[in-house]
Length: 319
Image 1: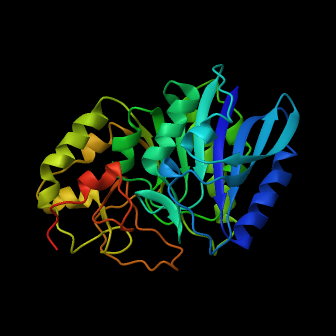
Image 2: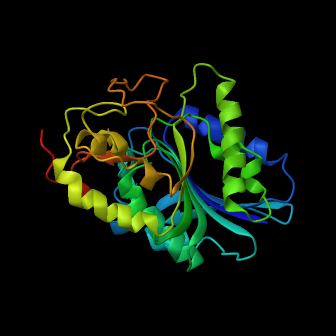
């Protein structure tokens, strides 16, 4: 049994139309356990961070269980009001998924600044009161050391993309609703592979650089290592997308003469795209290609004015 707890944020007509396709897709799957909150905003809406918000926001809650579906219109005001909507289940795998927009630190778009990475971790814990088996970021640029640092205490495994993510969603895969004998690695790879197959059918679609991380004891040791050396990293080369915000950690360490690949291999369980050498090729936001990266670091805050637990990584880089 797999229990999926999801938040889906959409702000464009395309995203709303795609979400309706997801609903039609779900009608064809038998006996799934899915609790999903839809936050549907206008493109020019202005929404404050939910952690500090007190203004009611309309949302829709979809509850799939025991072969039936319940839909209810709800009002939320803050993170706690969202977490109270979900009903935790403890048999089988517990998977928490965010689907929307991400920039490596925040899960935002335009003036809709409602969530940070730590807010998703907070919601996950507030619902389950224990570590999730898996957290999934169905969005762009969340495969960062910041995400690992924040989510380590909240999940056993994590799926995230170190590039611009496809417009496709993991919610559109049958595999994400079906466990693989409660084996989280097999289960994760199964829905990732199904996602990739869907992505490959459209040659114009983004090639997502997807990674699966096991949150084992190597992760906190590596986080301390990055903290020790981060001020030595140079911002002039990116090796990921552009040289403004993001840098590949393996390449960053290679520039200062340290090979971290043996360490990464201890907790990077799956990596879709691989590289033989560091490629400093700038990708535009319109590109459907991704430079491979098994883990990134964010060089500076993509959006000013939103404090985050990720801020510890943003100091001391030479420009």
